[in-house]
Image (cartoon, rainbow, N blue to C red):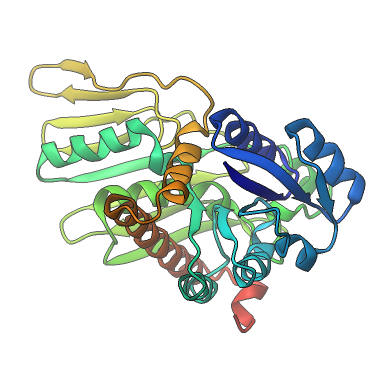
Length: 335
C-alpha cells in the first residue's frame, strides 16, 4: 500500500483522493494546507490522520511515501523540490511547473534522489486516448487536425467583478493555456510529436492572462489548430484529417466517442468504447503500477515516455507564451 500525502484541498484534489482510495493501491495518510481546519476537514473523509500546516514538516513525514500536489500552479515547484529533497515520489497536477527551467531542475533533482516525478495529465492514460494514437497510425499521411477545449469558468465572474482569482493570475501562472490548453497540447504532442514552430493568438483579459486563444502547431507537412478558452463555451468536436477520411472525436480528454468518417462512402464507424468508473481511475492505476514495480523494464519504459512527453509539452507551452507575450513572475526567478 502506497502511503499518500496530499497538498491542496480543491475539487481536483478531492477527485484524486477519491480515485486513489478506491483503487486499493493508496492509503490517504496526510494532508497539507495553510489552515489546520481545512486540512483536517478535507482529509478525515479519506481516512487521513496527519494534518500539517508547515511544508517542510509535511514533506519530511516518515509516514508518507508519495505526495500528490494540487496547489496553484506557481507553488508546484517549491513544494515539489521540498518533497524530492525528502525522498518522496511525486504526482503533480498539470501543468506540472510554470516553465521549462523549473521542469529541468525538478526532474534532475528527482533523478538524483531516485524518486519518480509524474505530471498528472490524466488523459494520457485513458484507453480511448491510446486508441486514437493507434488509429492515427493506421491513417497514414496526416493533413491536419483541429482540437477544441473551451469552457466558461465560474471564476471569470470574479474577474468581471474586479477580482483576480489564482487561475486568472499571472502571479500564480494561470490562464487558459495553462489550465485547459495543456490538455490539447498533450494530445497533439502525444499523437503527432513536437512541432517545428508554434504561434499563439491569445485574447488577454484585464488580469493580463490569456482568457482564450488559438494555437498553431506547425509540422513539416500539416498544421494542428488548437482552440482553448475559459471565458466562453464551445461545443465543437475535435477532428483529425487524412484525405477522404476524418477521425471525429468528442474531445481530447475523457473521450467517449471516436468515429472514423469515410468521405468516399459516407459511412461512419464508431471505434471507441464508452469509459466507465471514476474519471481518474486510469491515471491512478498507472502511477501505482510504476511505484509498486519500479525495476520492471516495461515500467521504466512507460515512465520515460511519459516524462519525455511532459518535457515536450512544457517546452511547447513556454514557446507559445513567449509568442503571445505572456510572462510569469516565475520566468524571472532563478530555479
